[in-house]
Length: 93
Image 1 (cartoon, rainbow, N blue to C red):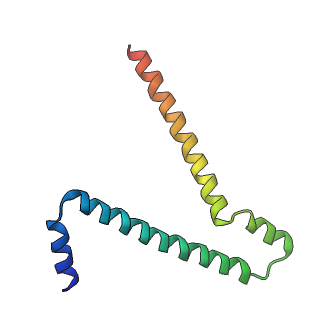
Image 2 (cartoon, rainbow, N blue to C red):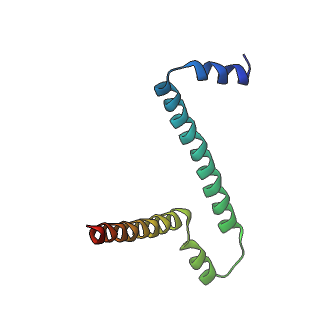
């Protein structure tokens, strides 16, 4: 059974089953991407021959810290946008 046959069989399944397959596939693929990203960043950081002060600066931007800062920034932007939308609705009333 080839890959295209598997796709055709999946298309015949109910929608809730296809959604589960999509979710599992997404988690597996994104986990692999994050793993490769973290591994390559760790290799980059450990392989550099910079002085200690520069190493500490780089360590501050570890992958999860950058992710945390990015999520916090995005959440703040969404919150501000939401407040703006609510103010516009209040003006309409």
